[in-house]
Length: 385
Image (cartoon, rainbow, N blue to C red; front, top):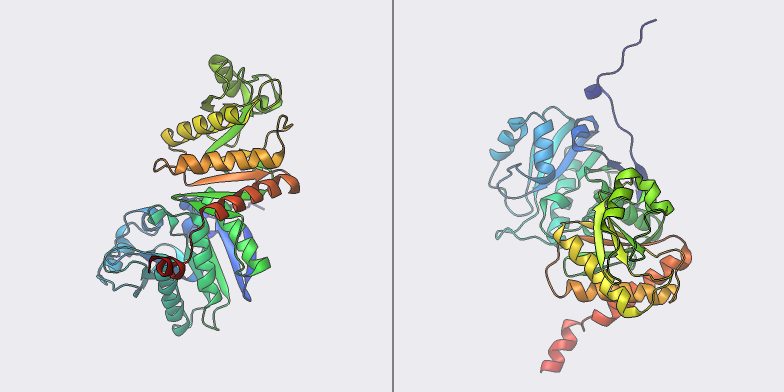
């Protein structure tokens, strides 16, 4: 019997993870934008602005795979959309039955989490009124400036928690692997802890410090930080994982000065770039100033290379200082650097391979939060008076 493969446009994709948020089933899809047409739902909530143009971010990705201007022309005919307004259109060549375009901006084209939450709630109310059962929500982080996926995920989860009673099945669609990873962290926390404060994350200006525990090989990033010797140790196991490209580049660049950093392609590693920080001497960190200098050099390289997400593990073995001292030193150096310029980095993932390392990172983030916390406005006003 001859078997024929299913046409890719006629197949569905599986969720990367499934969560429960306030009694609702939430499926997370992390997929390339070329597979958007394979996700099925009664409606897709698409965040946009008053013009309803689909020219950037997720909106453009959807437009290109929903029949180019087939959806956009219908959407633009509903413009201008008032702040937090909702417009319903067809979904073109996708498996969504409808698209709910919602304006997350105010009249001055600015937005915040409260405006976004209200816009999403309005879209969910319309979905319930239309009798729709399964609602997909697009990750709109790519449509915003200076936004991080952790904050977007929290806002979407809040909207789901405040949904109309008839809606209990949701699909969140991410077309960026790192954003998808961030959604996994937030949704996992909310499904277990509810909306308790998520203390593993702290924002310093436009960059998020995110402490997690996990496997470095399964954590996506654009740049991986490797703490090493000035000779860059081109024969160690990590370099061998990267293959010939990483080894040859490391040999070409070595040695570098103690306290300096350099950057190479990631080779066969799951990261485009590896940053080599010469912070060790004889397998030990000789001084705190050496570590700070190497961290600042790596941050400068990351900024100029336009690396959005950095993965920062604790070196193994770590000699010369404790894990807690290492974490506090690195976090403080990153904070100082971020306050000196508007950096391009969106996220620093502070990775702990075990519970002790994660606790060290978490304590460092907590110390930074306490150090930079401002008094409430009421206290500030009373002092001024």
